[in-house]
Structures are given as structure tokens and as C-alpha cells.
Amino acid sequence: MFELTNKQALVTGAGSGIGQAIAETLARSGARVWVIDRDVAAGERTAELIRTAGGIAEFSALDVSVAVDAMQLASRVPILDILVNNAGIGHVGSLLNTEAADLDRLHAVNVRGAFNLCKAFVPAMLERGQGSVINLASIAGIVAVRDRLAYTMTKHAIVGLTRALALDHSQTGVRFNAICPGRVETPFVQARIAQYPDPAQAYRDMASTQLNGRMARPDEIAAAALYLASDEAAMVTGSCLMVDGGWSAGK
Image (cartoon, rainbow, N blue to C red; front, side, top):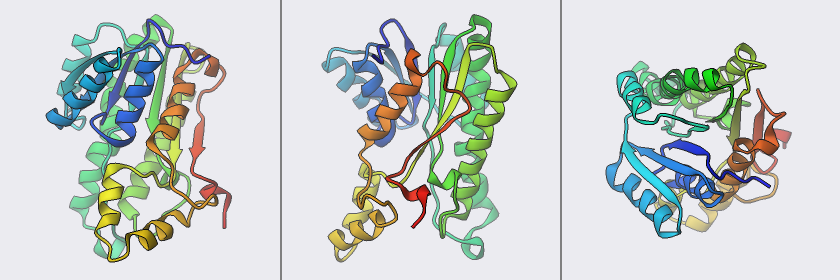
């Protein structure tokens, strides 16, 4: 099950964290992976890790917020079966300490970035009549998260984008789904926790929103992406797959 041999996959924000885990997981399942990140060193490191493990990967630098660059990338990738829009950034703040520039910055990457990659790659998928597009949303795309106004807005937009794409392009053979993680123990989050006076308590506080009492690992999010990318998910489109330790079920 979940065999991706001869599939071509592209993962944005694949230099670290969830994106890196997804790229490595898809490669282990047989896909040739295009590793995309604006951080050249991080992206090349992921591609090299995949090749060292026996997989096939190629790195390309890209700022997803630049539409013309996304189109140029698509011209270099003749066939794509799996598109994972993972690149994203965050911001802490309520309305009172969120400026318009903060919202614009998040929207450019989180929303326009996913739109730009879809605009660049989906038409060819539709022409071929097959493909899987996976957008990384968040628990913040389903419920509001305190002091994350701009982030919550953009992740709700990703959920809306996913559902609209699935509806507009139903019965085409191309599927559109979103993954909505809760808190994930990425290197970024680990570094943030380490800055607290009591890192262990900080971890418990962050993890407490999830009913199972811990954060997800990046590979657990990658497992969800593998399923959605595979032919076993042929009946799944327009879905928002929650990988949140029960957060969305309520407290």
C-alpha cells in the first residue's frame, strides 16, 4: 500500500520540519521528489539526505510568494503527480498587536504561495487527468487559536482554497486535500521551547491543547501526506485531515 514508484512529487518548504519529513517519506515510498525551499543550504541538505538513503531528489530554490518564479519552476518540471504546498510562516499576536504588514507578509507566503504553485502546476495535472494536491493548513484553519490572528486567517484561507479547488475540478481525476496539524515538534518549535526558563513545563503547556498530551512528530504529519498522495486515497478530495491529537474535538 501507499506505493509511489514512478510518481513525481514536489514539496515546498522542504528544508526542515514537516516539509523535510514529507519529502523523505514520499521518496522512501518510491517517488522522485523535487525539494523546494528558499533556504538553499537547508533544501540541498534534505535532497542529499534523500539521495544518501537511496532515493531520487533534486533541489530547487524558490520563494513561493513570487508567481513568475513558480511558473518558471513549472517549466522545468515537465510532469508532476503530487504537489505538496507546505511552505508557511507564522506570527504571534491579536488584533491589538498585529499590523497590516504582518498580515500581508503571512498572506504572501501562506496563501498566495499555495495559490501560485497551484496556478503553475494544476493546469497540466488537469490536462493529464490525474494528480494529488496536498495543502498544509493547520488546526488554526478549523478553529481559532488564541493570539494567532493573522496565522488563523491565512490557514482558514488554505482550507477554503482546498475546498474550492476540489469543487471546481471535481470529476477530473485531480484531487485536492488539506492536512490540519495541531502543534508539531519541529526544530523551530524545539528551539523556541529551549528559550523558556523551564523547557519541560513549556512543552507541557504547549502540548496541553492536544487531548493525547503531546505534540505530533513531523513524520506523523508526513504519514498523512503519504496517504493522501497515494492511489489508496482515490475517493478522498475536498477533505481536511486532522492530525491534531484530538485538539479539534474540544476540551
